[in-house]
Amino acid sequence: MVLEGLLVGESMVVELPLDEEGNKIVRIGHSPDPDDAFMFHAMTTNAFPTPGYNFVHELQDIETLNHRAMNQDLEVSAVSIHAYPDISEHYALMNCGASMGEGYGPMIVCKSGITEEEARQNPIAVPGLKTSAYLGLRLAWGDCEVAVVPFDEIIPRILDGTYVSGLIIHEGQLTYVDHDLDVLIDLGKWWNAKTPNWPMPLGGNVVRKDLGEEVMQDITNYTKMSIEYALKSPDEALEFAKAWGRGIDDDTNRKFVGMYVNDRTIDYRQEGRDSIRLFIKEGQDIGLIRTDFDADAMRFIGEP
Image 1 (tube, helix red, strand yellow):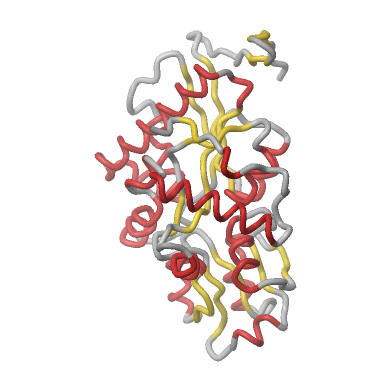
Image 2: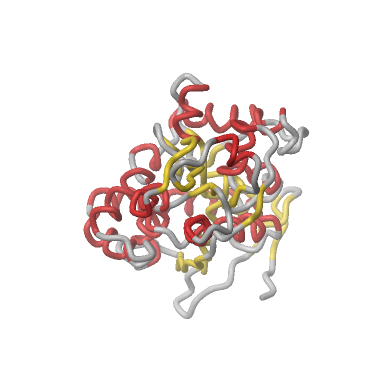
């Protein structure tokens, strides 16, 4: 697809393709998990008017989305906070759509009886090297030998003995108990204890800068409206979200969505933004994030 653009000041503003009714087509990339599906349900199913825009979603795992963002592929995408500095030249972080661990987060799990020392002596299955979960692991445990495994295969690979332990994200943070696995560390609790009880940054939504300020603001506003719509009328969005829950029941679906779609998702709030800045700085200190990125100068589209 070739997109035409026009110069505004010193920047090229991309003109988006139009649908048959003349609406701008905006592709939203998000993970195939219930919380993202819940957030974007309203705006991608025309549950409320979005004049001038046609939002379509593309579902891929978060590590794939991180790398697509590095190629400036999608107009809007969920990304890991860990990956944001690498794409910050071309994408702005929205002030809504956060996935943050409020006293919970990614976990290292293992079969019963495995010690932390044993886990550290073996490769740890992780969902991607640009995920925030991986950055959290490295901040908590330092250097570790790891193996990248699709997030939905980590628990099965622990159960079949391929890996001694694994770093789980998404609904695995609830379903691991069904497999009698033990938790060696909950990174969300670890981060809360390390900071002034701040939430652990995990994922955020970004919008491409070359769309221009007006379109960036429009998309951010509609994203916020979509989240608010789902929170006020959750049943339809929960049913929609369950399709991406890999067989989880209604109660688990509701609990998981509630963990990661809440008031913080509408607005990071100051401690959320501060937590993101600190998370990035800590990553810079251990060499996992580029040091020329100025976390203090970060702008959040839609910030009050």
